[in-house]
Length: 174
Image 1 (cartoon, rainbow, N blue to C red):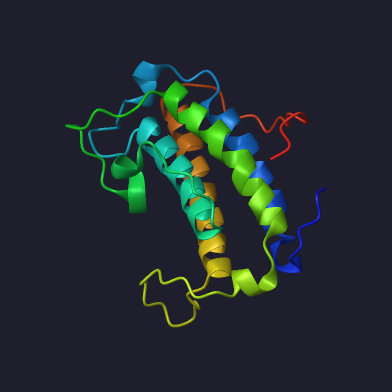
Image 2: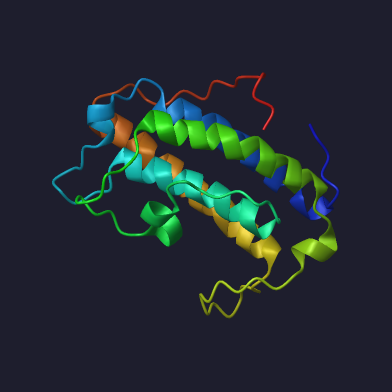
């Protein structure tokens, strides 16, 4: 396993890499038609969930100083409410964005130091026990990606797809 400069990220690195694997696995075989289906008109569809997942990666990129812009930022930033009037990207387009940003973020996670992680990063959640800094923002992003993968895994089953596999592609190094 790659060793980050900051020991504070030693738990984040394997989680990030597992989320990369899960993102690909959970979308495996999903048709574009099913990816846009909502349950009883109440749930987010898988395209929205996948888009929010990728947008979170761009959020981590931003706070780590990468000058990368999510091409679908306006649709997904801060978990923006799904709007059926919007023209959402395809799963392929979202996967392409995922493949573009994920290795860059991973590399920055390995390079960032404790001083950078301690920098103030206002998230304005007003949670008294969460210090608003870059490290905690990254931790919240990891939690969000976990949540989104779980939601997509549930949608797989609701849409009669087999359960998500936990296969690991050892060629994916991020």
